[in-house]
Image (cartoon, rainbow, N blue to C red; front, side, top):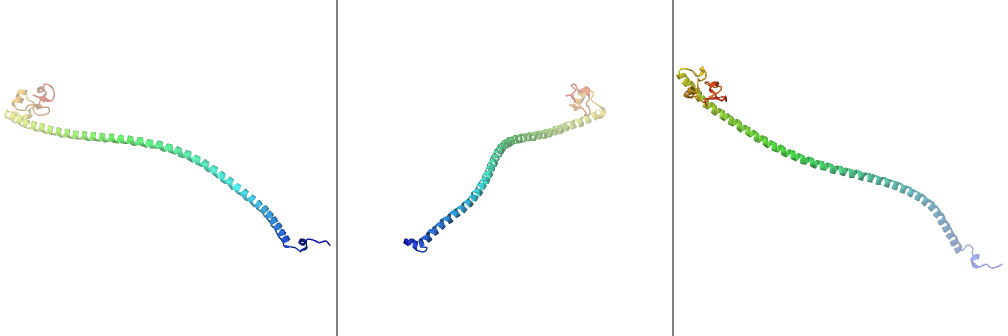
Length: 190
């Protein structure tokens, strides 16, 4: 018999066990890698699908952002235009308010002037009535003493009216006659 080296003579040595264990480990790793690779392929596909969805949503968001920007620009331009209109209207309102104030002041001044004139007219009418009353009384007194009455009619002439102290004679008063009023202004024997 031939002699075999010591390695082969031992019944399963540690080295064989280690080699078999190493081979089993390598085979297990290869199988695990193959299984892991197929699992990773599924994950890659899922990630690619998720990436596609995110890309699509990003594109939609960018489109929406551009639309929002254009709407914002249009709104900003419209707001600027409206601000300009508001400023113009405020200026116009201020101008109209100023004019109304000026007109109100003029109206108040005119009202005060009318009141002053009315008071002056009343004062003059009172003075005129006071001046005419004594003359009428005097003319009635003189006419009664001369044998006539003041209600008998107009004086014959201005000399008679003067001597009675009734001049000037006003239209509508006793003793007035149109034949005594040369210029026809309602005042005789001026």
